[in-house]
Length: 422
Image (tube, rainbow, N blue to C red):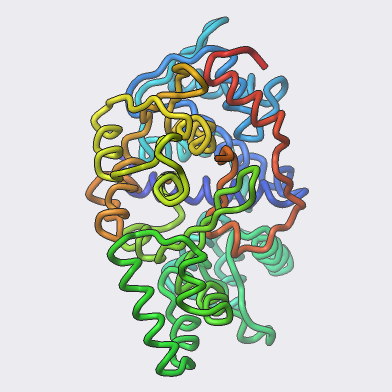
């Protein structure tokens, strides 16, 4: 019997690598099985909820568009793939999805990958990611390892590692070929061993006192408006801490601009490999949206008065509302089927949580300043329509990315709310 944890770890690497592939123009052709398995897992996670769900075909097409899949060409392939694996049932009008969680999806990603007959480079990409997570690896040692295990010539192995670093499967550091290191950039950032130590050791006593003050505020509240942190720290120190990964900034964009919120890296990645970041990113988006509602919304729009009351009600399965702010502030969560909105009257909406694990994570962060993922069995006035997590802001984007048009977002949400087709 295959070890469940091994399957989940492998699935996490598949999802991680597929996201990197999506940001490189030619990588999907080079790593087609990785790309397919990762996209299938992403679609399954978006379609599913904690409980069994039945979706109209218009909703499914909207979800595909939110996942950047072509509803006419790509979506039928992935629905057929998931149906063949008996993960969904399809009919002309509906798609039925069994109840799922993040860990279950990761296991399915592993199975889909194995069934796709991956080539040596695709299997090596997963292995390389795993071994460079255990400890940084010299480039020469990595080249020899790949050559031996996956029967590549030295030139083939060198070219594979060059592309793996370029796509983002692994990170590398160093200029001298004899001392170049390959490593997992997520873990390097999470542990903050060298960069954070160098930055913190260079601070004056006054700057150190400011950092202690901000850390204490983040530990107690879980999330702070970025403008508040910058005011307390000063612009130069704030930028330095962001660059070193000492603090993380998540941004929710809307028609009036960007609204940035700060969390500590350990708030979401203290007990878990940050590769499994779907639930964590969505939890950060929920924390940011709730914080925006508490700090920026008026009472007439539906100001958030109590994080605990809202999140506990949502986690129990209750529907909250109605309020106008609900229809505006949670759109990115609606597109990812973390929540479901239903129209009320006079431009107001009600909200229901579809993925309980996301609400549980958000509640822990807001109450305790961190999220112990193991405890919840998880391996994440203008409408908020875009969420950019910390990794998006820190990594080099290899392909030009643009924000979706307002019409594109409107069409997706209209279909999800059952108002009209797309």
